[in-house]
Length: 319
Image (cartoon, rainbow, N blue to C red; front, side, top):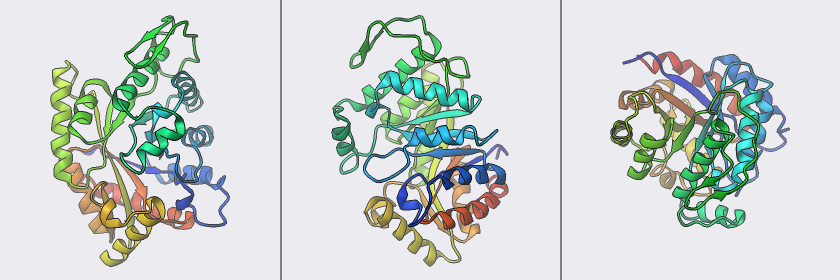
């Protein structure tokens, strides 16, 4: 097994993860603490239906406060934003961070979480995947080919495009795709720089990664063009029962749904350190090389405490 596993952590931008009486400016200190402990990456998620610090605002605040850690979105919902303005914002964060940005993107949950966000943003729900891919194509054109004055997609069309702020890296930051459906896997292999799903079972991860690699090969790309990553919610507890209780509370507080329902959708792991490490190693064996952990607790104090515990698992993930 390759000893190249990277471990990242989400900054808890959602108010459900802060707890009462917290000054949200402490989230910048959380980011600095995580970098100091040795995490490879810091991430933020994107959601319109609960109180939170907006994702790109958080990264802009963290960029000058940190020095080397990768900054990423897990994941951003691009189609809910004006595409040219979003390209400018992302390029600006890449500049402010010295080229440390990774842009994870997705098309939102279906059902109760996805459609309302599109309605609030006045964006059609239909063909959202095509709109996502075209938005990313537009960003890449703006970043890499600023002299191009127009963009002509099926859904997104612009004439007289201006030159925008150039990002730190030529061509712009890498863009990873969230999602584990067969369609998402194939699109990740053809079009994206990374794959960031959250399958509840390592076998599903392995199957999905095989589809990503097949599509990558069919598109004439190299075998290492797509970074295989994993989004997982995790918490270390003294016992398996305490772990289940923590996940129950986290699921209800964050989504308003029971753990049993969330566990059928997302990768979740909780319990003593050896159990959490063993479960994450199963995903490493399935092919992941960058683990993005969302700490499944509901207070900033507990988030800080978990930071110190989870990083201790890093040497165990390649064992």
